[in-house]
Amino acid sequence: MGCADSKTEGENPGLLRHESMHDSSLPASISFTQVEKDLGLNQHKSDDLDKYFHRYSYSEEISPDNLFKVGKIIGFDAQSKKEFYDQFAVTTLAIRKVQMLNSRRICTLSIILGNASESDKIKLLFQNYDLDSNKYLDKQEIVMLIEDILWIFLYAIPNYTLLINENNALISNEALKLNSAQSYAKNDIITHILDSESRITMESYAKKFTKKEVKMLFNPERLRHHALEIYEKNLQHEKELEMQKRLKEDEEIEMLSRVKITSDDEDNGYKSKKNRGPRKHARKSVNKTHNN
Image 1 (cartoon, rainbow, N blue to C red):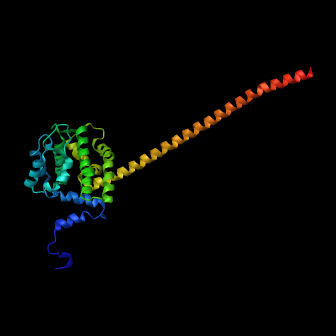
Image 2 (tube, helix red, strand yellow; image 1 turned 45 degrees about the vertical axis):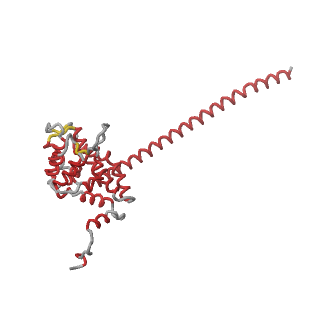
Image 3 (cartoon, rainbow, N blue to C red; image 1 turned 90 degrees about the horizontal axis):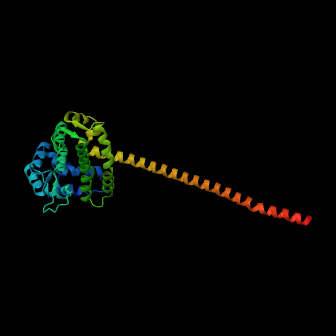
């Protein structure tokens, strides 16, 4: 057996994977992808995951116990990733004994990371966001779909990755940028899905996914890369606008300053003439008296 195939006795593969996640030299993108794999959803069919999450949910909410139950039924360890799923907590003013989780977002996570063809994922996502079951996705439902996907892969995944990789500057920096990039990426993707439409059918919706800007919703790594590109471009654009604004303000201040100087000069000239007038008159009076 060669060295590459050898394994130290008593070696714990799980521990090695956990330690590798704390390698501060790894690019943040690799760490994010590893976290997605470690969730274990990619080993199961998207359809099965979606079906069971819906079955154990009520009104787009699922309890942590039911989440863990689905994990046991399907065969993935949701309980060990409790801190990750805690991010899906539903915010409500009502006092509850049990903190509920957003099952719509969890279904979306499982559809995208689960094992299925692209066409099946498109169909499952459409069904997941056709909230009124009218066979259309209106603008509000499309915006919700995009916001949920961006929240999952630009916030929840990076944030959890940072949580288990404390003090990792690379991950911290990129997680912060990705979180800030959500609004920019949302506006960009919405324009590619909706165009001028107010709602779309399943057929029209499926055609939208032939566009690379929309297709990347199924590829978290590519989505994050694209979001960072948009973020950097918009950041640069905002800096340029801010610079132009400051230059304009400086020009206005300089112009006002010139106007003030001109006005002061005119005032001083007027006062000077006014002051010289009486002296000249007085001199004439003195001369007249002297002549007499």
